[in-house]
Length: 214
Image 1: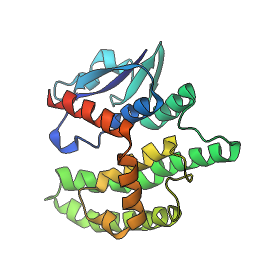
Image 2: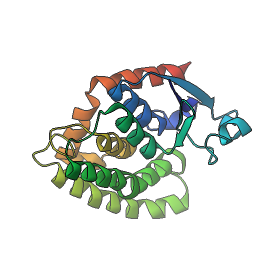
Image 3: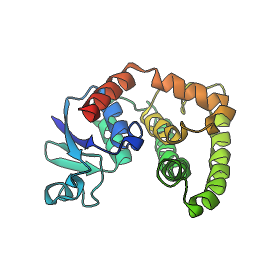
């Protein structure tokens, strides 16, 4: 059994874009038995001694799979794919491409998207945020243009098969769904809709929403 450590209570502004959601999605896609241990961010449970023994950075998500403890959402998603044999390309060259797109999603695409979300959701009136946001928007547009071009004629990043880097890329792009940035990139918006139409996404999102509303 896999225990997934995620949010039990969190500030409402970030509900729907927290990093535990991508692991929950992978768990559903991989059809792996699991239980969720919700942590109360307001009560400081992420920085309690018990959880710091699991993730010393005090962040979610993390998993405990029969004593194998892993943190960092990208590492967890890859691990779940490998454990289940799902979400993996069949050929070695395609597996390398999947790893490439994982790093692209986490290291290239996500940072400016997350910074825009942080500014808009928490710091919109701060002078530094007003000065910083335009440069972040331009960076995000540059990356979105690349992704839009890559997705031309494709259903997913690697072609017709939904693979684990799609989960991570969708999570990165979803950080700016509250803006109009995606409207200029039709392949990206179609891609997001296609991925969000997957039954596993709806199942994990519904359970996540119920847990955080409780």
